[in-house]
Length: 79
Image (tube, rainbow, N blue to C red; front, side, top):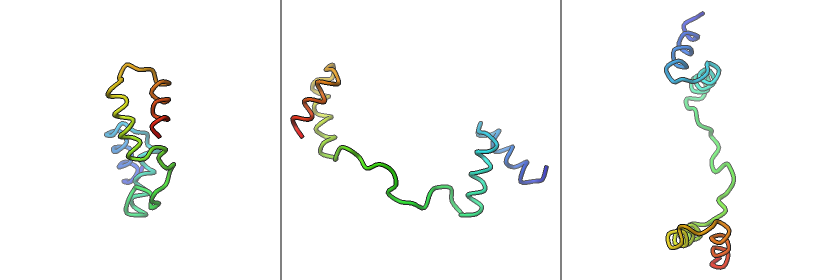
């Protein structure tokens, strides 16, 4: 086992992760200088706008024991 392999094992043990996961992250960091993706704005766009979330919070804070179906119906009325 060479020095890098020992480093991966020590890191994986310290973090409680698998050796494969530790190795992938360490290789990505050494080759790219970071571990996060270079892509921006990836993933699904939010379904609710900031105003919609505010309205939902208001509905739930007033009727916090209400069933989810009723909250959804009331939110749809406001939207």
